[in-house]
View 1 (cartoon, protein in one colour):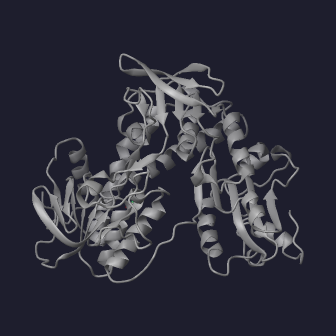
View 2: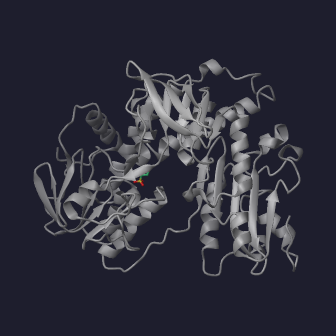
View 3: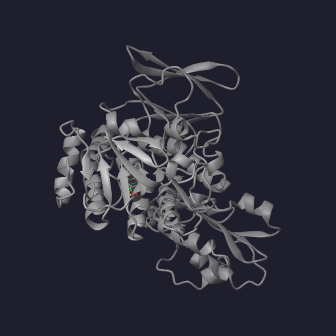
Length: 523
Ligand code: COM
């Protein structure tokens, strides 16, 4: 259907997307300007975060783009299966944890009604409402950003300048590939059984309330979804070959943060088996009923399940471009690009999860923007080797820069400002009581979080910040900006900032308590 002449409202977009998802609309949704005879500067294959932001930027620079997506909406997996449901589920985990922790105090009921908590309700809430977000993105992309796009249709790349969509060939000066990555299942029998899910199939397909879950994996996704499952009353076991949160991409997590987080998960009832090998998912009548796990001493035990959650990493969907264009990939299958997002094939760019880790939204969006700027004649690089990072358990965990251990290797003299201070137990003081944890500080101080700022004494520069609590993501976005300036951010500059809260996630007050020292010491 041709929507170019129509000025669809957000509600009309939603009905269109609903219809496409229900199978009522099977034809492509065409939003292509018939009166523009300019050649496309770029065709974006995939309208996720990278494709959408790249397209918006290229348009804003006066170029002409076409964006194609197999789904009937722009925005990609982030609002459909990944970041948005993840944030919803993590907020649910946080709220449930708060309700349980504060039960019987103030206006909180003596106990929360555990029978009213159903994981399926939350998944269905997301599933039933997500098209509202998709509708907005379509409306914004067309109405406000002036993008041309074709949705609900597969793009077939024929060569470096030609793409076929629904039997029509479109030519462009450049291609921008942005079709993401998919879960790489572990190489064990049984991953095809019913009841085995990854983050994507969980939101698309879950149709029962699980009663016991095994999560396979030890990284962010394992910890985040495991915490959600446990919080919704599903007893959860995490099985991981390596120690939890110790993968390469998580190397900057501070040891004290990791300890606080993992201990907190165990306190909340999650069973964690590290250094074990999942060897098979076992099924009866096509449905998973157990996970066979081998311990280091060779013994194998079966963990009973009705939900197995795969959090074993992702692999870029690069093969079609290798086959047709011959783009070079790394050993993990991610497309190789330079700092300008150029692949090994002239005129072909790649962005987002397709080029490998980190699989983060900011990176995808800025990759798209970088490709667009280069296509439009600017020579700009995007360096994402350092960035602020986060995960959720029932807490929000944020980190940026070096861990204390890393800093001690790199610098001769390092001090830390932390709360609770070294030697003080979490429950012994009502701190850090950062944003969003004041009630916890007064009622359950051990739950009020942890924070640490790492400083190089010689330069007085902040080289790492770490936070477990709530609401610190905002702070860390700005701290990242300040710390990554060539001149960095010193304890003295932090001490001069104006805090809006007593125990700020910016570490302002802790810095001010120490910045008077000419020879810095830890706090
Ligand atoms: C994120 C989708 S929810 S996009 O980056 O806005 O396109």
